[in-house]
Structure formats: structure tokens, C-alpha cells
Image (cartoon, rainbow, N blue to C red; front, side, top):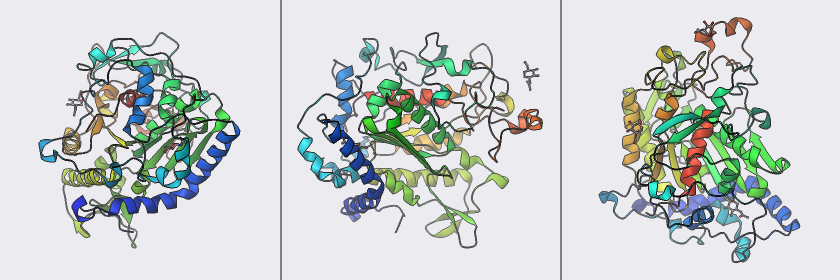
Length: 483
Ligand SMILES: *[C@@H]1O[C@H](CO)[C@@H](O)[C@H](O)[C@H]1NC(C)=O
Ligand SMILES: *[C@@H]1O[C@H](CO)[C@@H](O)[C@H](O)[C@H]1NC(C)=O
Ligand SMILES: *[C@@H]1O[C@H](CO)[C@@H](O)[C@H](O)[C@H]1NC(C)=O
């Protein structure tokens, strides 16, 4: 299989649909079993599937319940990407007709068409009543990523109990690892001028995930976000025996399913987004112009959330690659140039492979670390105006490269700019309440050396990534911006 970047559509317009078809067939073994068993169970329960158009309008379904008002304008950061030089974006072949065999799901479930027109009540609890009125008026000024952390007095945070989430990994299960304080679980992000947003809870998130496939792709910070999402949804499912979790030993692929909701949330580990290849001589090459084959398995998802960042800054023994490659040749490049090339490769893949009428694409900005000047150890409260300064932990030049590449894409990308709001959460890392690289609890001696053994990169759960997910769902409530 050739995994290099596809040429522009003019050069191979017929390719995507056939490729997707091949993928649909290969994915069928897993997914058909799921669909089949779901189908049998639904039939047994006499459940009539509610009308579910397979278009972007599906996104409106929940909004229609929530909002009486006319569709809101897209939030400021939901860029539409329709620049003048892309005035007529080339639709992916599948976009032309939603019933013409779009992605895998369409390909393997033709018999479902019969039920399309029949309406029926959904079997699960209705979403909670709508948030504070008047939020649409505020849309114009609302920037979800600009605001402050407020201590939540109500019982609404955390969104789940650590004990309620059996698959929470040891790395971030801070309470289980003995963290004595729990205040970090109860801070709520309060954006400015955004009405009651970010009050969204698990039941609403679960409802928004109904009949959807959400896929996160990236490094362990996106795995952190995936775990949070899976825990939020799991805790909200009325019958938890009707959920499944698949977690491969290497943690490179994970999936959580809530069967009664036909909701699945997947994670693919790909810390560079581009392909890291192990050569015959066991050296590692970072292929800046190629994407890992598994990325094709994300096609057809309803929501895709990407991230990359930290692995590009690793140096010395921690650096994952031995050399860089471009166009089949070994190349020497400065780190920034390599990063830019890789993001261009990723952006082109998205632009030529993602059908924006079917898939909403998010890019989560860099998750900050709290080391050196801003050490996370012993911290029990967020940084506020009064108690400290933020020293940015990630090179601004790399952040600029990310933002530049996203700006140049023709696919509408929601840039989840969580860097700043997360920088304030110096209190929210596992620090010493984590496990070692070998997966063991920290020894007494190690606990005495927080500067060596603290994890100030990942985040405790429940905790900060729950907020990233709440913000994610705030975008999913809104209709797809028209393109
Ligand atoms: C289940 O969800 C998938 C998306 O993950 C969707 O394509 C499919 O139509 C849904 N199935 C039913 C029975 O609604
Ligand atoms: C952490 O907090 C404890 C108790 O407040 C204090 O005794 C200790 O010195 C602190 N350690 C560091 C490294 O700041
Ligand atoms: C992201 O947030 C930072 C800090 O608030 C801001 O400086 C930057 O311009 C934002 N980026 C985008 C693309 O909006």
C-alpha cells in the first residue's frame, strides 16, 4: 500500500471512494460485529431508530432540541477556512450525495435505509434542559478560550468520580496514587461573554455522541483527553454493562463504546502525526512527507481531534528518530523546518481526504508543561493574577507554525486553543502521584525526589482534560459552519 500523500484531486479524482471502499471492507470485521449485535439487540427491544439524516444536518438534531433560535454564527475560533484563493473548494467525491456511499458506515449498512423515514422516540433519557437563555446574542463576542477558572461550589464538578471509571489509567489516577488534595477536580472554566457555556455535563455529552464516531489522534496528551472523554461518557451511561472498552497492550489504539447510544470514541497514538518508520537496520526515520497507514482508518469519523507538539522538542536520548526523510531521501533540517514540513503533509492529507460535510476536524493546541520555573510539584491552586506568572513552556515558534498551517487549510478546522487556559492549571498535574516509566508506583526514595520523578506534563483525572472535552462539546452543539 502506498501511504504517501495523495496528489491534488484533479490528478486522481476517483481514488478516494475506491480507497474508502477497500477500507470499509477491511474494517468490516470489527465494525460489522458491532453493528450486527447492536442491530439484534435493537430489534429485540422493538426499538425504532429515530429519523437520522446522514448529512451535516444530523449535527443539528441536538441543537434543535436545545435551541429555539436561528442557527448561531460559528464561534470566532471555528475558522471557516474559505479564503479567496480557495473560493471553490473541491468537494470530496462522497460529498455530492449523502446516500451515494460515503464512508464505511454507508458502505456496510444499505438495509438500514428502510428505517430512515420512520420517526420514533429515542430510548434513552432526554438531554438536560437548555442552558441560560440569551447565549446566542453573546456568540459574537464569545471566545471560549478566554476566561478564568472559578471554584465550583455546586456538586456538578467533577463530572465523574475516579472510582466510577474502572479503566482510568494508573498514570493519571492521582487519587488512587495517594494524592491527598482534591480541589483540582473542582475548578470550572468560565469563558468571558459566553453565557452559560461550559456547564455541559455527562448526559448532554452522551446525547451529543449518539450515533457518532469520535476519533482522537496524537500523543499521550490526546490519550489523556480520550480517557477523560471515555470516563465522562461512561459515568453518564445508565446501563454500564452496555459499554465496551478495547485497550491494546501498547496503548496505541483504544476504543470506548456506549452501545445503547451507538457512540464510540477512539484513540490512535501518533505523536508526530507523520510516519515514524523503523528501518531494516533498526534505525528510526521520521518520514516528513508520509502519514502512518492507520490514519486511513479514521476516515468516515464524525469528529476528528488531532494534536502534536511535545515529541518534536525531545532532544538527545529522548529524541525518537535517528534521521529525517523527505521524498525517499535522507535530509538534514532544522527542527522548525521539519515540523513545518510535517504539518504541511498532515494538512494536505486532511484537505484531500476529509469530507467536511461529514467530518468535523479539530486541532487541539499544545498542552503546557509545568517544569523548571513553574514547577507543578506541591501546587494546589491554579495560577491567578495574584499568585504567580506563567512562563510559557513550549516554543512560540512551533505554535506559530501550527497556527500558520491551520490557517492555510481549506478544510474548516476548529483550533482548540487550550494552551493558555491550561497554563494556569499548575495544580492539575499528577506530580508524584503517578507511576514510573516501568509502570510501578513510585518508591519511598523516588517520592523524596519530586524534581526527578514528578509528571508535570500529563493531567490528573478527573481534572483539566475534562474541561477540554466540555469545550469540545460546546462546538459540537453548534451547527456545522456552512462552507
Ligand atoms: C451508528 O453510528 C455510526 C457512526 O459511528 C453511524 O454511521 C450509523 O448510522 C449509526 N447506526 C445507527 C443504527 O444509527
Ligand atoms: C511541599 O510542601 C510541603 C508542605 O507544605 C513543604 O514542607 C515542602 O517543603 C514543599 N516542597 C517543595 C519542594 O516545595
Ligand atoms: C491562542 O491563544 C493565545 C493566548 O490566549 C493567543 O495569543 C493566540 O493568538 C491564540 N491563537 C489563535 C489562533 O487564536
